[in-house]
Length: 255
Image 1 (cartoon, rainbow, N blue to C red):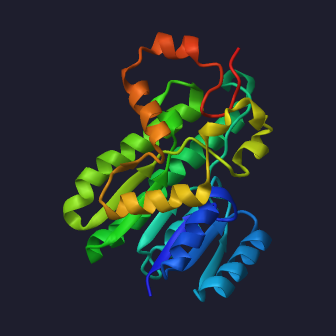
Image 2: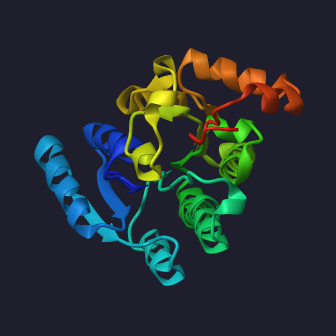
């Protein structure tokens, strides 16, 4: 049976991926900081789908713990990697301690880089495998460090997808907008400031993303409304985006 490794699988998009992949018959390696919560999710998934769930508790921003997760790719074949772990900031860049900004940079960029590298080497040797890097529509906008990190994820992933296509390895960036998850609550964000039509369901999003992966897409933007937003962002002058945007897609209200 094939195995998938998912970071941040205890809630939101990560949990939706865990449910989806377990339903598809994948055994799972679940990676997050909270071991007790990981074990709860593992038990639920095993009971629901009859799959084997391995729990790997790690703070991915700590180099030694990240190295333990990287080593897992060498101890047994991982057919699918979902890089989902992340967090946002309520305050603007200059108002955050630089240590917090560096932690976000590590989790959203460095961890994605390292785990993708660890995953694709054995995938290339086998001639099969897939990597899904969870990015954001925010990466198509110029909205501070979070958007910059997600822009890197999308461009890195799209470029790698071209390079690895001939080697039998699929690589895709998933670029959602606002999703009903714990992400915004952890930021302390007032979700009522976001129009209801912009919110997506995590399960629907993951179903669409998985279909896009199966069709060989390098970038998945779920829902027609976010496809339009992403397209508009590519061609709208930056000055106009700054003038019209009162709320960024990282969830912060703009003055």
